Image (tube, rainbow, N blue to C red; front, side, top):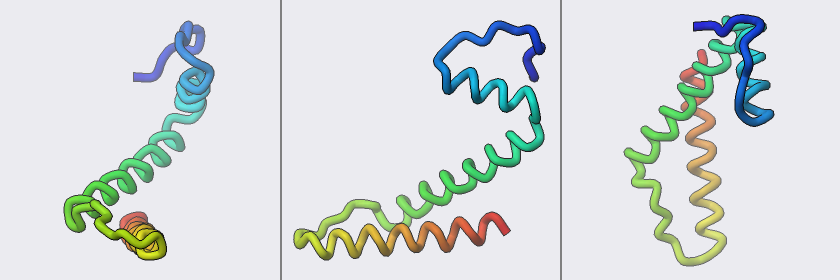
Length: 82
């Protein structure tokens, strides 16, 4: 449901900008929205598969684990967008 052009948009500045962007071009907005939705679902699936808990003690191992997970996420996300 697209609001009327003379509708009063209540809320914060970012909310108003989001609604106005949606009103101006709904197809572009929804295309971007579903890209973000795919990325979020991939993050969720990675968390389910890997447990997402970092049980490392040494700082460099923690950084390496986080970097590896980010790279896996990016690879899966780029595949989902194809």
